[in-house]
Length: 147
Image 1 (spheres, rainbow, N blue to C red):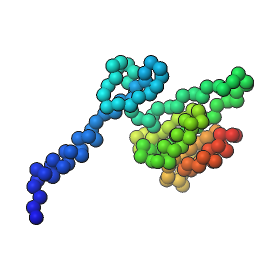
Image 2 (image 1 turned 45 degrees about the vertical axis):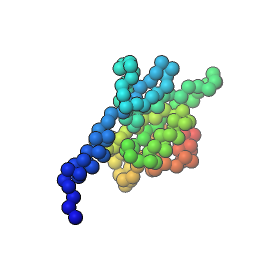
Image 3 (image 1 turned 90 degrees about the vertical axis):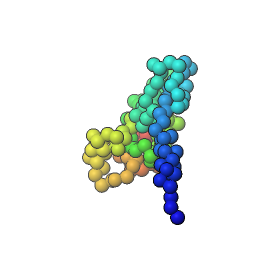
């Protein structure tokens, strides 16, 4: 059985071309974030579509009582890691501001991660109020945030 080379080329192009598409993230006048394959009408509202580079907003106070200092949270992640995404979703859900560092895109972040925990090759690595946490565990994150 012979395979026609043009069929192989057609097959490869069918699956390779959609991977080249750009995704735009933009915020409308009401503050809602949108993702689309086409540019919005207002080009000034376009942000880079790299969720790992977007820092979550500072939490808003629920009342006027004295607030404690905001927790310091740094996450060392990769774009493909499901546990990294769970960690970020947990922090966003709880209105915790955090910084993300993609260790595959940023060599200095990878070096900092290695310095923080030389024996840990996994991800995510969280540093919450000075406490280093390997992986994602909701209870571990809550304990570190309570400190």
